[in-house]
Amino acid sequence: MERQNPRLDVSVSDGATVVKLRDAKILDEVSIAELGDQLRDIVNKTDSPALVLDFSNVTHMSSSALGLLITIHKRVREKNGQLRLAAIRPSIYEVFVITRLREIFQIHSSVEDALASLR
Amino acid sequence: MAEELVISSDLKAARKAERTVLSKLAQLGYTPSATFAVRLALEEGLNNAVNHGNGCSADKTVTISFDADSKRVAITIIDQGEGFDPAAVPDPRDDENLEKPSGRGIMLMRAYMDEVHFNDKGNQVHMVKHNR
Image 1 (cartoon, each protein chain N blue to C red):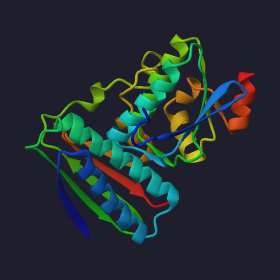
Image 2 (cartoon, chains in turn brown, yellow; image 1 turned 90 degrees about the horizontal axis):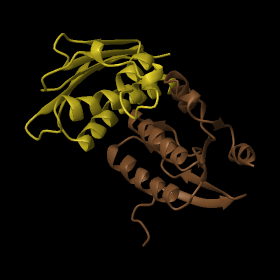
Image 3 (cartoon, helix red, strand yellow; image 1 turned 90 degrees about the vertical axis):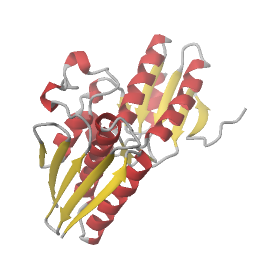
Image 4 (cartoon, each protein chain N blue to C red; image 1 turned 120 degrees about the vertical axis):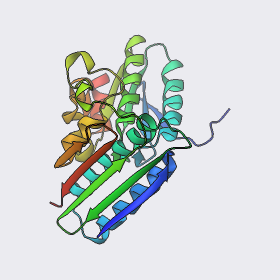
């Protein structure tokens, strides 16, 4: 059954799932919860997920959204999968650096580079 | 000139209050960098006030007062909760906290605003950002 209010555009490339986040602002808890459900659905349906999250639309993120990414990261790791973040604009990348989350996530400047790292 | 908004403990109301403040900054010609910082800090401060301070209680309000000119904006957020000790919040950048999903709001407020001060009770935060 198709979800109401899809927050993601999903495609497959080179055996990896590329998930483009639709919302420019990932701030409020309702939309973060919906995003989380949709990401978990994707991760849960593959044995060893290879997942690229495309942030090219994202201009603002709250700390709750960072918390969601950590949860997804852990779930992918539990399933022996791989997660890459891609196309993060400088203002958002700075948040990852300030919080030291840059050390947790593998971040690439483009989806293409992220996919190449998964080969 | 100072303005004051009183909102219910509701995240939709918080978002509306943010838009009011940010609209004022846009009128005053704030830089993208300063605007990003204020939006982020307001988001975190209001989420904390609504969720942690007031526990989303329908009988509690959050007061946002702000005073902005072309050079700086000062924002105070007051909730009606019991308060807390901000010094007791673990540093989310410590190795043992790095993979915890929560606890980054205050750290981000301090990183992005030029000044952040809590009152002794911990139910009021005052923040300042210079427009540069």
